[in-house]
Amino acid sequence: MTSPIIDFLSMRNSAPIPDLREPGPSDSEITTMLSIASRVPDHGRLAPWRFILYRGAAREKVGEKLAELAEKREGPLSEGRRNQELTRFSRAPLVVGVVSSPKEHPKIPEWEMFLSAGAAAMNLVLAANALGYGTNWITNWYSGVPEGRALLGLAPHERVAGFVHVGTYGGIAPERPRPDVATLFSDYSGPWSE
Image: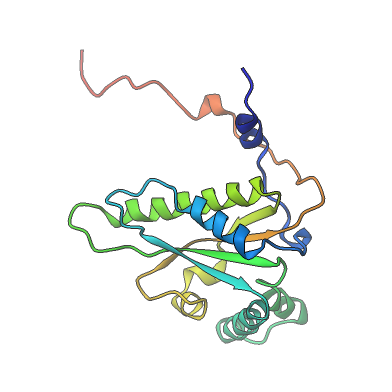
């Protein structure tokens, strides 16, 4: 039996970020994407994630701040390295930050909330793809440092689940080697002794 949904999921892949062009999603499409992104497993109904939209002139401002931070951390940057940071968030018309924002809870561990944020990022990617947009989900160096997270709008207790770059993509995204699924599972045989 074939299914258009299975066919869609079987062909999903990431578009190269520099090839994501205008137009980006409209406000109503963004609302649709975020609504779908929020329909994920969420133990305790805590919504332990949130979204930050980087679009318009804010994307260039983020690049300026990232270049400054990179220079502070690495010393003087070459022109190529500086341009790399300046364009981090301006290569696609929209970048959605998916932020893990854990809530205090006596029974639900923080790692489970982080997984829920990851699921939200994947649903966001799938929703954007279903609307006809290309996507690429990354984190990058600035996600791992407190100064980077702060300049991108995260609170100290929050972490980046991903930055999803979204735009119009006219090409065919390159296929990459996929793992052999047969090597990734086994039947449970139990811890018991015979």
